[in-house]
Amino acid sequence: MTIRAFADPQDRAALVECIIGLQEHERTLDPTLPEGSAMADEYYRLLVDRCRQCHGHILLARVNDAVAGFICVLTMVPPTEPDEPRDNHAYVSDVFVHVRYRGQGIGGALLQEAEALARAAGASTVRIGVLARNQEARRFYENRGFEEYHVQLVKEL
Image 1 (cartoon, helix red, strand yellow):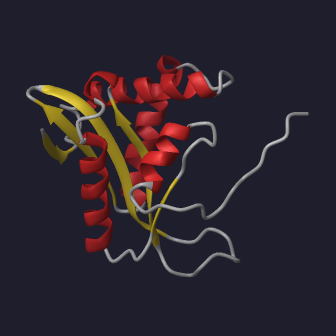
Image 2 (image 1 turned 60 degrees about the horizontal axis):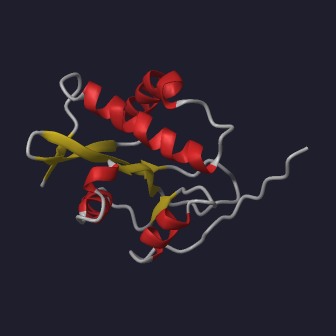
C-alpha cells in the first residue's frame, strides 16, 4: 500500500468513485441523504475548493494499481464563530476505504498521514465529523485518540 497526494485531473475519476462509495455508505445510515452519483461531481469541486481555501490535502491510498481509499484534511481552518477558540485547527472532512480493502490498516495509515500534515502546518488540534449512527467509524476514531467535542442534536418536525 502506498499513500500519495491527489493529482487532479489524473486521479479525478478514482476520487469521484470514492466519494460515491462514501455517500452510499452514509445513506445506509441516513436514507434521506442524496444518492452518491447525484452529488459526487459537485462534492468533488467543493473538496478541491476547500483545500485551496484552508491549505488542504487530498491523499489517495493505493494497493497495486487500484485506489483503495482517500482522506481529505484541511490543515489551517480558522474559527468561524465568535465563541470558538481563536487558533486555527485542522479538520478531516472525509475518510473512505473501499469495502474490499477494509481491515488492512489503510484507514489508520491515511489518518496518520493527515495528522502529520496538520502538525507540519502548525495545527495543535484536529477535528473530524462523523454521523452519530456510524458506530464503526466512531470506534475507529476514538481508538485513535479522538473524543467528542461538539454534539449536534436533530429533531424531525
